[in-house]
Every structure is written in structure tokens, then in C-alpha cells.
Length: 383
Ligand SMILES: [Zn+2]
Image (tube, rainbow, N blue to C red; front, side, top):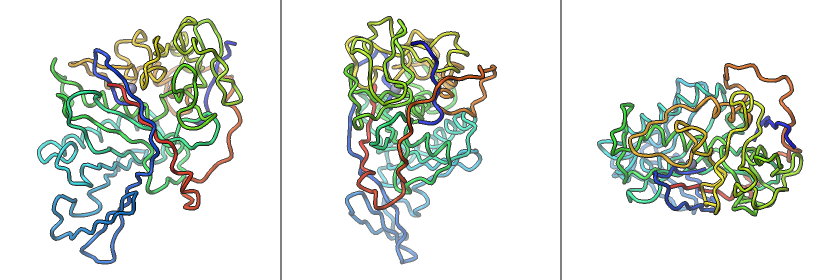
């Protein structure tokens, strides 16, 4: 079938070019990091997911931030309320985003990226983005992003989408996306043009945020089992069709109805059939679907053939900046459900169907549902 699909509502580090090995990790997320004010005015207590408590004397904080506020930054001049948590800072690693000489500039660059995302999305919800403790290896992936999904069957974009577009209260202790940066690589950490030896941090952060917003597949491999739980797929998955017009996921039920070879690109490739992207791009934008399947990379990016400037392609070379989503990328976000995006084109009146039946809502913040919070948390890592 060739009908268009649109989503009303619904990861991944960036690999250095040339593409290397990719790794996905499915992890149970219990790593809520709580920051709790102690009764003492001059002490506060950190509590991690295991219930370990650390009391910090604000007069002698050591490597810990001297005030709890220092652990969470808020971007205040945007429509979307961004809460940014830097674990480097919370844990006082003095590396990465807590680096004594470069940490502040790195955090400022994150804010610049989010300001751009705010302008594009034109929404007024709130989202919490956590930066996991930075890597310093200088090998492997440049950065990784994770998105959170409830283990309830359906087509969805994940927690960030839900909180950005609905303003629904967040669970105060869980991030909506989790990003990890490998500062061991050589980075351009400014808005200047990267040199030929530098990866562009702005571009890579923007890429990771794109995964967190919902640009990712939940299919483990070409057999399309869900990474999260049976029947849990992304809206991005739902939009897929092969180049020969064969459906990959059922329109109504969250079920893979294609053949494995479809997801290996062997039916004339894989493309997205969202109405906005079709309108803006003239045809369905191609999805990266190599054979063999590349864990962490396949199906969660646009094909490099789409454009050398696409932010959401599987890798980025040194010296290259991609600091703005292409019109077709914005249109795809629109098709995922970010319908306040200004596309500058007239869309057809009938945008086609929406993804199948919506599952019964589960409150994110109900403490009694905490076990359900241990949603598989996946890290989609390209290198
Ligand atoms: Zn990626």
C-alpha cells in the first residue's frame, strides 16, 4: 500500500566516519538520580537509584556542586522548558561537562543546541535531558543517545515527545532522554567552523537530540522484534514502507508485517511515507537500511544518499558541521507528531491515517507504578 501516514503523537550516538562497528545496548533503567534537600540548611543529600545516600556539606563540598541547583540547569528563554542534568557536574568528575576549563563552554553549547531545537519545534512543554557521565576514551562512538519508552504495546515517540507536546507532568526523577558524549575525541566546542581534525560538537549534539525526539527504530534486527517489549514500536517504524511499496508495520496494530529482507533494504530500499515529508521532499525520504543489519545504526537514520547535509545520517566526518535540520528532516519530525513545526509549504488537507489504537495511558509519575518505570532504556550507539 502506498497511503501516507502521519503521527499525531509518539537513539543514538553518532559515529565517526568512516563508519565503524555499532553497538546497541538495552538496559533496564533504574538510574534515577535524585537530588534531595536535607533538613539541614547547609547540607544536602544525593540519593542514587540504589538508595545510596551521600551527605554533602555545602561549606566543604569537595568535588560535589556546592548547591543542589548547580546540578540542574534550566534554559529559561525558550518556549520549551529544558531541564538539563549533567552527571559530570553532579558527581564532580572534573571531566567532560565538569571540566574546570572547558565544562562551562560545553554546557553553553548544549544550551545553544536546545535553543535551536526550541525554535524548530515551536512547542511549549517541558523536557529533561540528562547527560550521562562523559567518556574520555577517544575511541568508539562520538556520542550516544537514549530514549525512554513505556513497555505498553503501541506506536510511540517516547517520553520526550510526550512531555514536549502535551505538557504532561514528567516523572521528576527520570530523564526523557539520556545523552553521553565521548570527549576523548578531538572536538570543536564552539560555533566556529571545525578544523579538518575536529568533530563538530554542536552537530553531534543536535543529532543525538533528534534521536531523543523520536527519530529511531525499535526493531532489534531484520526480524523486527521490539527492543522494548512485544508490540512496542516507534512512530518512525510505523512510517516505513519499502521502495516497492510494501508495508513494514501494520497500520493499526503494532505488529511487523513485512519480511526480514525488507529491513535489509532488499525490496528497493526503505523509505518513510509521512505526508509532510512526501510533500516537502517529493518522495519518501530514504532510511538507512544496509545489509547486513547494523546494530544501533540500521533503520534509525536517513540514508546518507538523502543529502550530505542531513543531520540524522549514520555518521559524520571530521571538519563537517551540520547544525540545522534539513526541510525534509523537519517534515519528518512533523510526521512524527511535532505539528507546530513551520514547514513553509502547504500540506494536503488529508494527511492520512494516524498510528493504530492508542494504549491506555499510564501515569509516569505514579509512585505505585514505579516497577513499570524500569522501562527498558536503550542506548542507540553509533560510532
Ligand atoms: Zn545516530
